[in-house]
Image 1 (tube, rainbow, N blue to C red):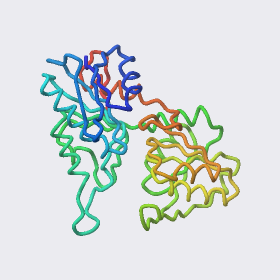
Image 2 (image 1 turned 135 degrees about the vertical axis):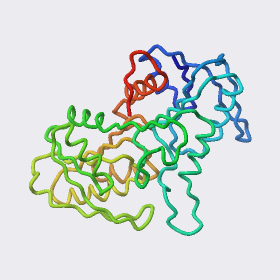
Image 3 (image 1 turned 120 degrees about the vertical axis):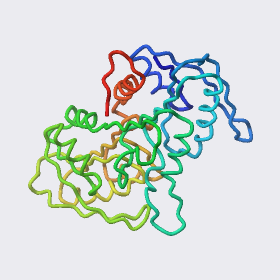
Length: 301
């Protein structure tokens, strides 16, 4: 039975995971001195314990040092193993050197986490050029899929949906979700000129007149891809689409860009945000039980 610890901002998710199996939640005090340095103090006995740290890694730079210190404090205090439960896994975007001199931050970040943890559980990481997390992580790294949960929410809340992927990378999402909720799907194409400069090319949607467009993607970050796709959908006399994603990062301006078009955003609680409507605790709990050898667990691969 693992003991769970929550890094700041992850308390509700850690409690929801622990409550499903009656696992204990340890007490780890984390705060900052006036000069912004981290202070940590462990208030639970972890000697000989398997522990799991719940810490979604959106906006990682501000929280990574505290996570590293927590891992080392737990080691020094005698914990037997440390698993990181990070529903959102940062630094997967830079998976190749696009220009000379660029840092390959996906591998560098993976090396840092692999040094501190014995295992990693995450949800729908950005696997584009990497086929699996094992290409960059040297620890047992489990990548779960939330597509079934997204499909379940769509099926329960939207009548006659048309699932739309905004670009070729979203084909895996659109196809799996559409199949799970028994809906048709189409996929647009996209050209990217910069971090916030994208152009989406839409297919003809006239065959699906009368259906509710639902844009699905793994991440809402700048919101530019979904916003441009929404404009193309609206231009074909469809209502503003519902935008459903796993990870709601919502960089500055993203919510405004979507709401200005009349779009509703729906996300999982991988990253805390008012758009959270899809609960990940059951998925994460089952995976953690499997990884720590709970007797009634079913391993997720």
